[in-house]
Image (cartoon, rainbow, N blue to C red; front, side):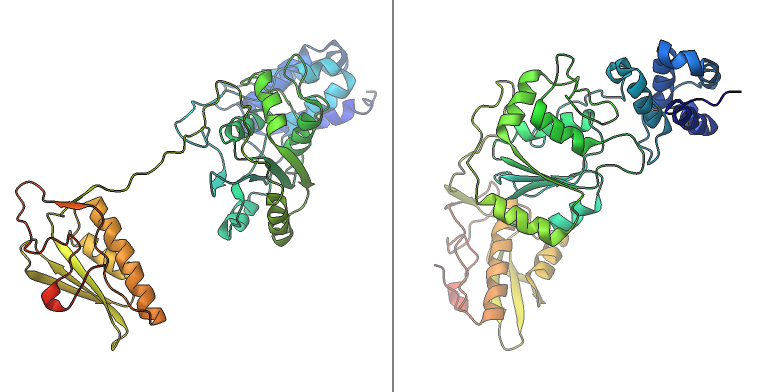
Length: 392
């Protein structure tokens, strides 16, 4: 038997490895590749019998792509595309778009959101560990950090999530671009997209990845993305300190929110919050908060709305107190919980710093809930003048 020439021998080796792995038999990636190669006269002329054997192994498809670290079908088809360029335009990995959700980011993914109104996004490619390392100690100006594993659906998600946030003006691409020989090169493909765009078939021009076809977005989305963000190529870099410094430097060049997103991209609106106009007493009662400096602790007194002390709590931290009273069912309104958390934090700071502390009056004009007794003093904050407490 005459040995097949390169790269046909490599294609044969990759297909042989896939054929030996039963998980590939039911995988859409394997089946898609075999079918594509069978349609190629160039490849089928030499490897026809092998392709027929591979096709005979097909089982009912259970998944489109497992994201394996070693994807033999992907490597085989990339090699085959060197001999028959038409294969590069053929079928591709599963790229069905999930349903868009309300809010930002509108599409799911492996990312950590830091702050909406920040100009820098970081794409860690296949270095997933960088997500946690960069988000554990986020720096000002970092909006979102997430991974990118594929040059089709992954890049589509990245584009749509970025367009939904006009504040993102920079995209730092870092981390490792491929996992072993998976065949995906999302980083190189993303750089190619920014440099050259897409052709009439929505294939990323000059992308070297497995199947860089964007079928769930429109050309105007791609062009808007290319105008909105400036890509900073740090592919291969995983030094967290250096990346943090780069983020800090990049923020200084923020040009402000992008104003030319496609008409169908609706970002999350920024609403102006209103000051409270009324204060409704909590039917569960009210609290008096003060630091006990002698014993270095916080004290929390709970009163019924008739002004009767019924519970007392002490702790060294605000967290211990608000957790305890919530579990005890002594807070029934969210506005009261927010007020109590704020006052406990202020009292804790005063205890630690030595600053004076006077419990603030809750905001708004008092309004008694239905079927609740009004308090004798209508401060609405829980201060008891006869106990020496006062309101600001």
